Length: 456
Ligand code: CO
Image (cartoon, rainbow, N blue to C red):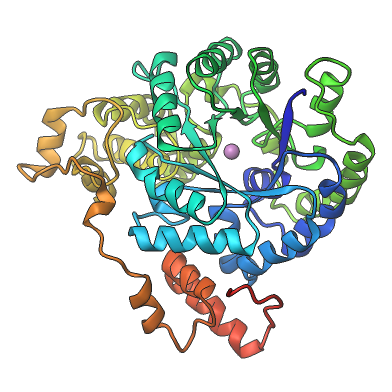
């Protein structure tokens, strides 16, 4: 049996290390070897890969997926999306979520991993139902974070709900890399004891301790782990696939990966890494360990965002004040996990609270919406006084936010009928608006062919 492995180099690897800039050619480069290496799945698609294709690479993300599928005959392809947010930053109506699941699966995705920033299971319901409807495998990822409410017991209760909802498996998604070895052990053991779900662990090496966490999770019976091939591993990315392979080889946890294929694939991707080191997109800084994330309990990406926000305002000397304010804002807001979009929202509010000299004097619209319940249910109770200061007597919604949204796919399809060549194009426009329109217009003018027709 042993431990199954999901290869993340082609999605999270380059997303974490150099802003998701691998081109489709680079993504496909080592795919024949990876396909023969014996992975449980290869992660290839997600919000940032989709966005970067359209925005920076002038590439069609759907085309990347179709080409990958053509190569991968043995291994499942996996993607990640944010529940009702899909790949964007707002809630989408159910018909768009449904169409997106349908088209992702038809174009080549086998496993859809979905998560909600607040772990509000209601925001995942449509994604699960639609994924199953179109024959895909659906995994629900729980956003892992630390707070007085985010205990092992809290996650076990969530895991039971995940099972009830009909997910095929569960992932503990430690986006910040703050899951401690002993906690991982208890978490995996308790979830396995209380559900029948296969459990996967996803984390980041940022804080320097995650290989230890992986080993404890493996000892506790985790079924699947996420690792990245050596050129795209370590630092802010996942633990190295080959190293984990050697660590487990010959033990009862043996991953049974094909060593030669791993090495061949790594050889092909090494020059890709070098290219991004040379052009500066891969900053060597992100490759070294940063224990500050364990101290402040903020993800590495959020830390660098805070630094750049403060730099722009010439207030970098306030960094420690802002880092001290982050936990206060989180507490006021009912301890949202610091993952997109909450990490940006909490970070911005902490910066505003410090810079304005008065807490919640300036409040971004997203925070107001959050307090109105438009993102879903906060993990713990929100500070009433602060909520009242910001939203006054406006009513907080207590139902699933997407229940308020009218279908919009057909309308978008009609509106963009002259530009969009397929339902896939309509989805790109639904998710990325002007960025997608600009790309599609350009593509149409340049007559870049879309090779495979999957509109069946
Ligand atoms: Co990740």
